[in-house]
Length: 134
Image (cartoon, rainbow, N blue to C red; front, side):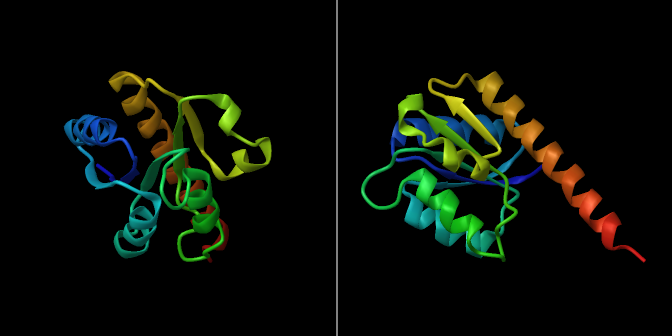
C-alpha cells in the first residue's frame, strides 16, 4: 500500500496508530516526536505523514507541517493532523493540513481518512504529471 510516518508523543497512541495502519497494509515508521519525524520524512520520502498537533518537547505537529511545506523536496507530502481539541488550531495553519481529525480516532475513521487522503494525493500527482507531459 503506502508508506506512512507517524509523529505522536503519546506512546500508547503511537502504538495504536502504528498497529491500525500496519494491519491496513501500510508500511509505518513510528516517531515519538516531530524532530525525528522530520528526519524520517527526509530520509524515507513517505506517501503520508500522520501527526499529533501538540507534542512536547520540541516542535509541535503544526510546526512540523510548516517545516515540511517550506522544503521544496517534500512540500507536497500529504499531512493528516490529529488533535484533542480545536482550540489548539489557528485557522491560518489549516491549509498545510489535508485532514484534521479529532481524538479519539476510531480505527475505521483513521483507515478511511488515510485512504481518502492518499487517493486524493495520487489524483493530484497524476494531474500534475499530465500537465507537464509532452
